[in-house]
Amino acid sequence: MKKGYLDMELLRFTTAGSVDDGKSTLIGRLLYDSKSIFEDQYQAIEETSRRRGDENINLALLTDGLRSEREQGITIDVAYRYFATPKRKFIIADTPGHIQYTRNMVTGASTANVALVLIDARRGVLEQTHRHTFIASLLGIPHIVFCVNKMDLVDYSEERFLEIQDEVEAFSAKLDVHDIRFLPISALKGDNIVTKSANMDWYQGGTLLHLLETIHIGSDYNHIDCRFPVQYVVRPHSDKFHDYRGYAGRIAGGVWKQGDEVVVLPSGFSSKIKSIVTHDGDVEEAFAPMSVSITLENEIDISRGDMLVRPNNQPHVGQDIDIMLCWFNERNLVPNGKYAIKHTTNDARCLIKNIQYKVDINTLHRLEDDKVIGMNDIARVTLRTTKPLFYDRYQRNRITGSVILIDEATNETVGAGMII
Image (cartoon, rainbow, N blue to C red; front, side):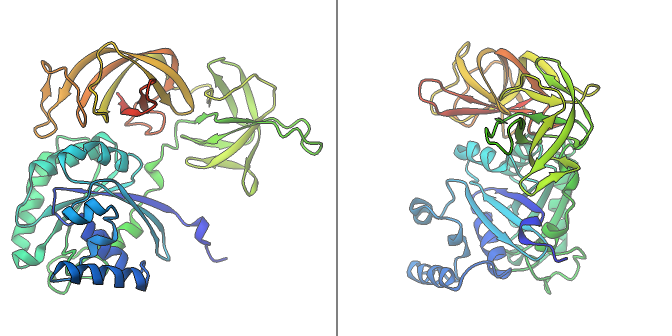
């Protein structure tokens, strides 16, 4: 049976890089060469490019949707684009390169399987390259692809490409990144994006699209630790499902099967899985990131925010939590301040107990004397929550290892944290 569009594997990727490295042009080229844009969209950007006096058709206009972005020729907000090939579906987050938009990059990259870090072949590795690679490793993105762009401006030199590769490998050795790849490209000319470049016959690897279609992402989710945060208790109150009580949510880790023994946190009561129901009916087993409804053999008092786990594999349970915090808000973080905290489906309140250090994003040095945390800063912070959270280290599970902080007065999301 032919694989349907809905059954296709979904790959999320994000772009990062310094200003004018060609992130938006790369995405425009990928969409255009893979025939994922409509003719009228192409005509519109052709017309805009001509009006602006651009030499070539400016494919960056496909993602820079805000008027201020088009006027300044930069990316400000995260732009999401969707496209599909016969092999996979893709969601692209085009994130800004400017230092004042670090929070936007964190937002766009937090769910990505792959980060494309662009490097201008003429300028080589910059501070921004270090910064974006650090953020990608902090966010636990499993695969990082360094796209050495604008190879046409260095005469497609293999020597220059290898020079940049050596430099990147030297500094990324200090970071927690497992899969690093390198690709020489020209987004403007289309070299090695969708079709193989005739100008770089020295490069033996595949194109960017081929890499995105074939990179293995099945193991990006944690299939070892069973974690199921309960989002909603399903009680249909109908004659047909009179006694039905299911626990709906999105699996955050592990493989779940009928008959498995489970423990409910925080109560500690145990039971066995009676059935696992999906949108398409009952299934024998389910795994992350599927959304399912689970029924149990015993009636246990379970509500939103509780978590189903395995008896012999349980998360950390605690109220004092160390996180790496990226601050999103114009108002600085308040030491000893109180914020609302969201963790999986759990809501609580927390107190900023201690600011340990701030990270200099450009050098990766710890600034232990600087405790002023402003917008776009990244810092290590200890929180005290009003009730226990059931969590894993972020590096082990990106879903159960992340939190967001909310200002209770304004209801704004003010920060995102990765649990250490």
